[in-house]
Image 1 (cartoon, rainbow, N blue to C red):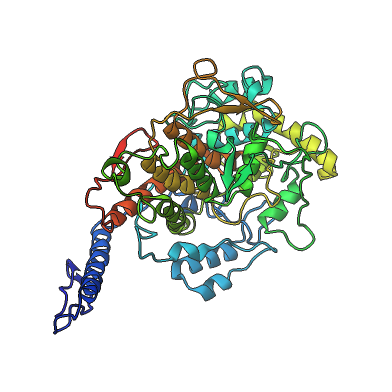
Image 2 (cartoon, helix red, strand yellow):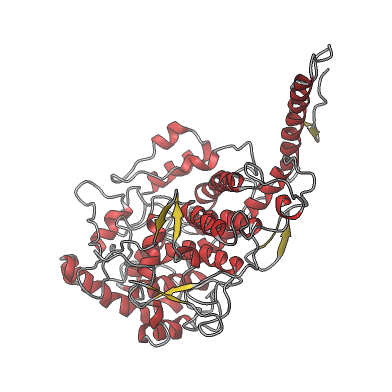
Length: 556
């Protein structure tokens, strides 16, 4: 007997015969296996049909690629560039041709300017058998090069670079933080919390993110991995303001080499590391963490911490978990237990296909170091780029010039002269892929949404802590004295902020990248989990609930 084929419109999605044999199966085990074979087929068909019926979501760009023939508003790192850091037209056209055809050999034909290779442009073309297709999700375009929002988010990155070595404990009294607040407050395109204060500067206005310390409890509290106790102190580059610390891309020659993908003989050095292990206590530490983490590792760590709370075998799981709300005789493991949770954390890596589709095939948005090169060449009169005057007239540029002058003198670069370039922590300047949407952003959006659905968002974090001024120790965070109680939902949102904005502190992403990546991750997770729910055998399961970053509740 042939199983009925599901169709959508006039398009046949499946054309495979499958069904029970002509004769009655010999035993119950065979009957069960045959029934599951049929049901598994039906579930996969229905999931595919449901995704097909979602329709397509045309994606808008910010128009810069068409607006500027010299491609100054788009990503081109690694290709040949002229002396202004503008991409050679033939090379960019070869990139566009490969993106249009999607053929491996056309990507291999793209001319490169140096040793750095393009980061996985074909990844966005991957098809998935679970969850939405890479091209199936929508998002707003990034800010255009000449827009007030682009100026504001670039100014924010300049200020973050100047504030990297200021302890979070000093924000209420530090004069550079005060100057950053004064300057960023005048930008018409600033998208951070307002009014800007020492407590909320450089943060995202998600529920709980503005409460308590800048750093999430899931990056501060001790935890165990395979029974190994871990104190989350880490090695961080030495500060620029004291000692032998350096940043990169402070000189024009190094910046231009980076845009060209580092021709032979131009590859930069490495930072001098602080021998003292420290808890994350400033933006340099936060940036370093977001520069060395594996994209899913923060959420494995958070899950292990959450599973350690409460009495044995009773962590603060969601009441929607059927083994919490409905069962008195069973525990979850490969379904609704730790095994299931960690499988999902890994499976959600597929969201990267959608992210890379947006990066390469839609937006091709320039990275912050490239944007700062446009600012530099405009300020020194080498090019008439359409940078918004709110940025060109900002006092942050004069401060950055002096900051880079100190670095260049220390490193023996640029004749000891300064520049208006963005000093970054990553030696190569930025990864060799476009900026928007941000990868750490969608990594956070998917996994934090999962953890908020899996655990009780209103559970109050036990024994909260905060780093001391130099990050060498932790101190108690006292609710009611230091701030409000810290909840699982709020600290997970803060973890998403830390991992996403840590890339800003590192110098390689913008605020808009994080926001778009976070939303993309949430949307992917919702579609993914709604599809998976149909596979669960626990008939009493009523669906998970979680709170999105914008405060709305979603039932899955």
